[in-house]
Length: 587
Image 1 (cartoon, one colour):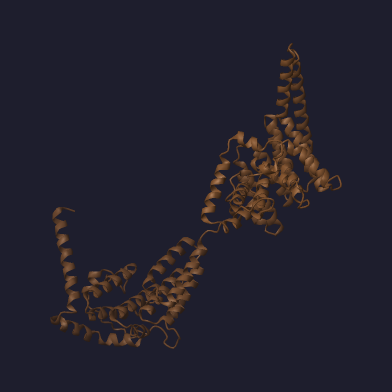
Image 2 (cartoon, helix red, strand yellow):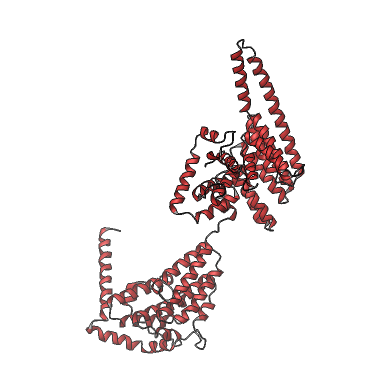
């Protein structure tokens, strides 16, 4: 477009705008009273017909000309959305006449702008033509119609406009018709009838299947009702719309909610596996299978071979207990294969220990035998390597001529063996014997013998043995002087990172059993245990949060951070073999 044409177009637009202002102002200009009267006289027949119609009756309830104009506007749009075009011309004629009767230029302009905008989607149709253009709408005189049969809705019905709602062919159309009828009744001050169309809005929304489209329409509907927010019926309706919108939000997967605060992948897998079995027992096979699939996904992403092997064992147990016996067998084979690939021997033994703990929950005896065979193989490998190395080092040490140097060398060999994986396996074996006596597996239950074997393993630094030993001591007579010793063992286990030890110690602080009640320290230990997937700690953390002040919560968080920041030397020192004295049993 050249510069000359742009100027012409700009001038023409300005002329139209001035013309619109002039037409709008005519309603308040005494000189234009004749024109207004002529418009009114010309449309007398049409206006009378509209007044007798349900549309005219409803518009007549409006208290002001502006409210009447808005009522007629929404009635016109409701009919257009319903495909009922017969009364459209008469309703629009009434709209135009009503606009000319308004004295306020601002109100006139607002009604013209609103009506033209509402007519936009129907521009070009036979009934609307170019009336969606605000300038044409303002300049056009009311249409003189030949059709006097404007009452297209049966007046005998309780609500004459309900037939518009029922005539729609889709939930979307039903909603748009109902929305405009709600607004028409509200502008007319008929709040009681507006409630019925609010109900039809909810019916239309319930029939929609596309969440995004539904959410979009709910938002538009809520915005259109803003000016009536103080009306009781509207306020209740908006609450209902919010409820419908909330239902559209994706629900959090219960399985993911369980592991939300667990940072350790192995802990996440264990919780998911336990949950899958619970779901299967409750008869929810579909959700159980989905939970197992989530556990498999976490396992597939693991980099630590030891954690992966232990996780596979938990998964195998869960699959067996869910009736997936073939899958369970295959998963356990994968776990054993993972163990065989782990080096050095110390890590292999540690992983096997985790697998043994997991397989104890299985009801599959063949799986237990398989793991037992694997365990014995690794034990023999450890013993063989240790014996060979010890013999080699002793031969080397014996070559020292000076007795003092030879003795020092042998002492160093003993200390090396003491800190090797062989000692760990010995601790595991003693712990296992303790559990057999404790639970009466293969032996009669014997708490005294269980205590002896737990203590032997605890002295070698076995955290689970330390926890079980402490609990046996605490469950003895309350006047037993070993209470503080028991707490000392729990402190050691907790400081080694044992979730059971941390949860038990946290419970003692929460209850004030053997120690002074300290909810902050209780929260510290429960949080550390919960992060590793301890189910009791997960529940306890939430309960403690309701009892702690904001200051106490901050302090507990700082204690957790401080514990996590300990150096390896500090952790090893806190897990030393000798039990703490009563005065040392602090956390």
